[in-house]
Image (tube, rainbow, N blue to C red):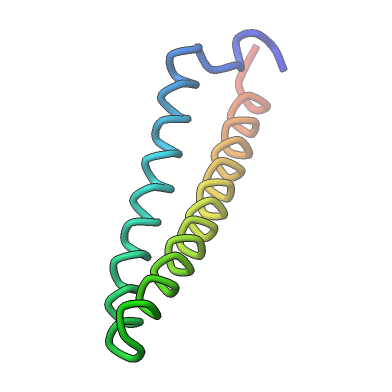
Length: 86
């Protein structure tokens, strides 16, 4: 990878912060809806167990989505550099 292809340090930090924000948002959504479902079918203790499970599951799915988007962006970027004149 050439120096021009690497993101600037501030852009890399912004990317990491965005990744963490997506993970946290997905975990919060999973926790909220899973707790609601669990407490409906089994009470508050079961709701807490399902909330933790939902947070973990949604965080894993969000991580896979982030990796897929990053892979597509890097493939598109490498194609752009390959076909550029000069």
